[in-house]
Length: 429
Ligand code: S3P
Image 1 (tube, helix red, strand yellow):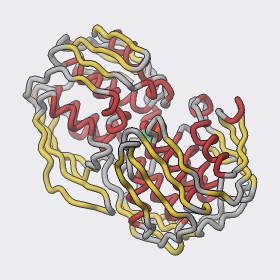
Image 2 (cartoon, protein in one colour):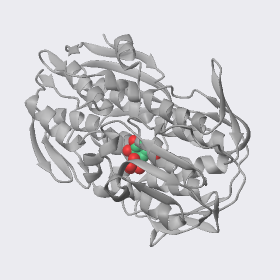
Image 3 (tube, helix red, strand yellow):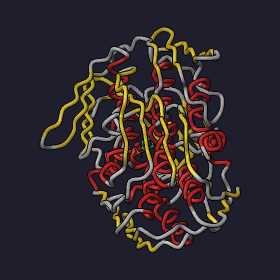
């Protein structure tokens, strides 16, 4: 893909729906009783992996033009006839492992080259402690993993990395376990599972104490089917926010965007950098806060620091934030982000290498990087590592760089934003 500098950005967009919420909506539809209707579901490679897994468990899914209808089976699933392929999706592999741990049948979960290299012990270990049998490569840390579920018992688990995938996996298992499942995390990770549990009628206790943020769930609760409206994904909107801020002439309205406080770190950071952003028409949709975001170019951005405790609220936006940091005045720093090394690619490496190739001074740390901003980005050859967020972040960088930028593989945008290039063309001047 070849990219050249654009003059500006203008118009309005509704970026695709939130990936995290779309995964959860179909899982909840499957484990509830009755017909769940999901509107604005994100149809992308990652979320399709979850839908396929659900269908392999005997859940009937009706695909209509404006919605998906899931015939809930209240955890009464049938043994899948084949291996479940989570493809590139960590959320599919980890959340579905929690569901499968409740089933007494045999199942196997695998994924693509990238996912088979990502750590799974973070869910395998606590699910074993709840009573399920799990094994896999490297003593259960790597896919493929096989699961023989069981009658589970609730546990109290300290989620040291504040991972929402781990928390969600244990809550999905805990819903079918005896007693109480409790997950404690040092920083509150995205809380879509807790919100959706409440939406589907479950009793969940969420509190913050000295020992951390706590979610408590009593097992054996029945969920009732609901209508779920998926809002636009802030992680996808972030590319357009950044682009609008970096071009000379930019005004963009992004409609219907999720602004959940566990996900709004990127917006907060760019406002701290001095960006001109307004949140309009703030409302609640299916228990999630949503707003229209109006962005204008023109403000001189200044460097910022991202602290370890801020990382969970902007973890997926760090590649595009790094690009924005390169154009801001001063040295920006990101620390406490070691998790980025085990995402779809090693995102610290990918960001550092690509920014350096574009002529920017970047220092690499084990858990982050420092970007010396204020220099012009130079068009160059970019390696995306087949990682959707790296591809989109450096496409945006290419659109503001001087000279031509070439990206080696952009097919990966299918993972979360199949129409990315169409939408970009629609708002570019
Ligand atoms: C997700 C949680 C985050 C995030 C991922 C989606 C989720 O991962 O990076 O893209 O939907 O729960 P971790 O839970 O591993 O931090």
